[in-house]
Image 1 (cartoon, rainbow, N blue to C red):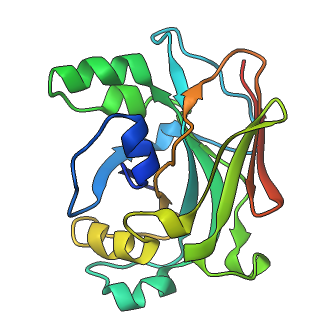
Image 2 (spheres, rainbow, N blue to C red):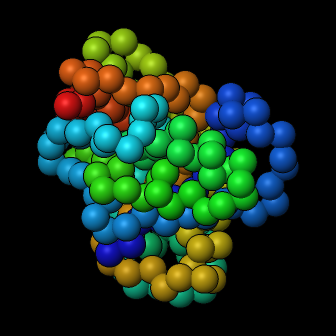
Image 3 (spheres, rainbow, N blue to C red):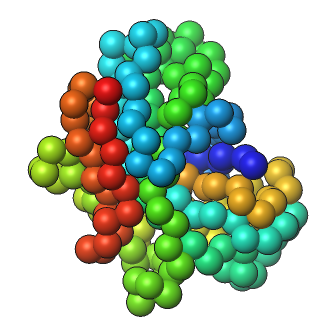
Length: 205
């Protein structure tokens, strides 16, 4: 099982991160299988970072094997989605960026890919490119957006990454985060929604 992530896929987050580059192709990075955290289990803040930040994203689960998938056929390769959190050690990431080094230790550490309950797209009654989603922390909405604002749409992402990686059943694609990322603290309660359906619910320890 692979966890494939798309960075810088919302203009609002790019502005928030002071990233003014115009990307012509999706920015792709990977997380380890040990990054996965699911079933509402708590997230424990690691001792190697003083600034762990949440990034709320729509996550797509691949349902069939594919390679070099044409964009017009990409919809055949997923049926279920959820809301997830790409936990980021922002202080480590900043140091790595400053030295033009890879991001792995700031992005792919254990339990950094948190997923909610996967639900069939039919449950929402809307196109995957029109999905509203949000994250609440301690009852307050801190991130909220819609997949219609993605710079690279989900079918385009699948077509692109399948040029380089064979997609297999169960692979997960994190499709990018909007503005509003921030630091998590011990005892925070995180709840993630697509539309008005709560799919993600866990604590920070």
